[in-house]
Length: 135
Image (cartoon, rainbow, N blue to C red; front, side, top):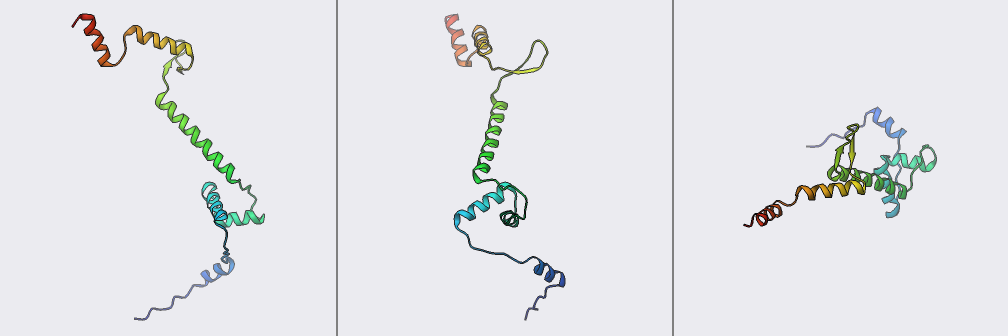
């Protein structure tokens, strides 16, 4: 069976006439930079080309700036996540606002309290009790 030859409708012909394809070969380094800008800044290849021609009024960031921005965002995210997981919080006895353990005085007071109250590993506490009872 012979396939029918597909004909483009007039609207498609006008689109292709008004928006021709521009193609060129570039070095791997330039191509990788183009992909980085496209991914990190959300720009299309056409936007990048227009910016290079001065037709698109956007400051194209250098690759170093883009990497630094991504690093800073990741670092901040990591710090926030670590704070969520590991920071010790308590309520202020005066106003009730949440505070974080941060000063050496607070840490010393906590160590003293834990030692006075006999807190420790379950096995260690049980062993100490047996020793005190002479078992």
